[in-house]
Image 1 (cartoon, rainbow, N blue to C red):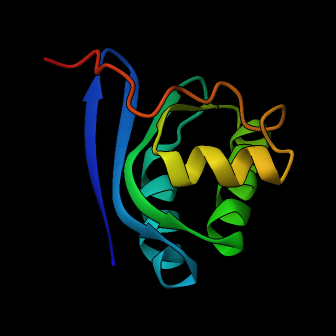
Image 2 (cartoon, one colour):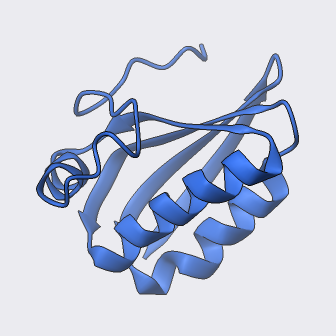
Amino acid sequence: MVHVDTTTRRGTLRLAVQGQLDMNAECIFDEALNRAGRPGQRVEVDLGEVDFIDGSGLSMLIDAQSHAHSAGYKFVIVGASRPVHRLIEIAGGADRLPPIGARKAASPFP
């Protein structure tokens, strides 16, 4: 199960993802991104509370980054749990999904 909290501040949308990022999460994750991304906007995705990710979750991240590029907004991963960080490294996607934060990035939101 996945849960996505959305916060907006100064033109930056932050999606905090919790739980499992797998094929069952695709609709929830895609819906949050589709509501979120606007041209010129920055979308930060915090994956620090994701306790499981599989290949379909990694594919969602890569697709989201590609969609953001074509839609004109910036997609940035600002935090990654150990499972997320490990899968991205193993798959060789660190250069495709920059920047990958440490296990948990400090939140710019009070």
